[in-house]
Amino acid sequence: MRFEAHTDVVNDVCWSPDGRIIATVSKDRSVKIWVPSMLGNCDEFRGHTSNVRSVDFDPTGKKLLTASDDKTIKLWKVSRKQFLSSFTGHTNWVRCARFSPNGKMIASCGDDRSLKLFDPATGQCIHSFHDQKGGGCKVAWHPDSTLVAIALDNCRVKIFDVNIRKLIQYYRIYDGAVNSLDFHPSGNYLITGSDDGVTKVIDLLEGRQIFTLTGHRGPVTTVKFSKDGQLFATGSDDCHVMLWKANLEHDSAQSSLYSPDSTCEITNPTGGQRKFSFNRDVTEAHADDDSAYSCNKENLPDTSIFVDATKTENFKISDAVEVSE
Image 1 (cartoon, rainbow, N blue to C red):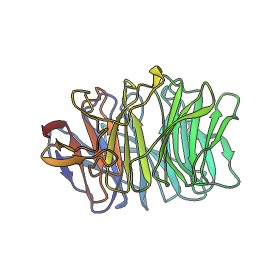
Image 2 (image 1 turned 30 degrees about the vertical axis):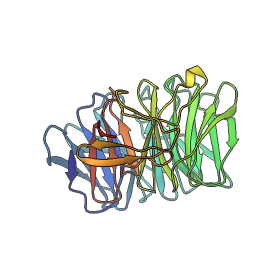
Image 3 (image 1 turned 135 degrees about the vertical axis):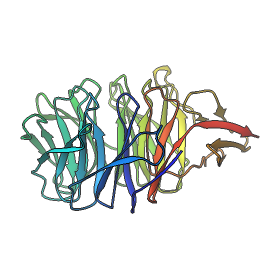
Image 4 (image 1 turned 90 degrees about the vertical axis):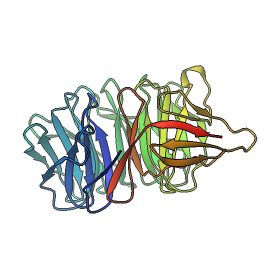
């Protein structure tokens, strides 16, 4: 499926928890809600005065959170297409804002070098963590809502305990800005992507990096685990998406390309080539170069379909089907 309505770059996409609707945000300053079964139909939210960077549903799917270069975070009611409140406190661009899994807190980060925690009920800032050297690119919540991780543009990853409000883990494992990160559903692993084109997996129980994954030819801009933790996807400025089988709980990771529902697999130990079709968009898969067009994506709750936002004014929903060898 292909959806078009934005007039500038689509920065972020997010599925609702029930998988029925999609939210997108763009450099055109708009927020849009789409129903995949109604192609071309969307509702629009406007209120930001600059580039909108991120979007996230609350755990109920009834509210929507957006972050913008206008230095604000905004909360919207989905059903009524209604603006609810604005969260202020950042002094520069807000790169990312995310609800905690229990819905009781919001974490945000931006170019003002702060990670902020907000109470979504009151709009008040609960706490601010400051970094003297790096701006925040992305935040991610631990599944139990007690920890929040931040990807920094100074090559670092930091993890904070939100209850005691202290830094508990710190990693410098890259030579470039860390653009994205995501917790494994078990909470035991963290996947990260960087400007140097590399994806790395951290074992949080052991406190060390355990895997380095290569293949992208440009900055890795987004990473995401599937809901069951069996797969993860990486997207890059090289206009490629790679899908990987994790096997993290078995102490191994494979550099293979899987379809989101695990029905098809590409392995390439000898440099061979196979082709996949993503809804008629043919993708060539190589040993280290598996291509699809994306700079961000989200897995559906059942992990069978993924959606990607392109560096154009549209985005696509893709269902992987093998068509030829």
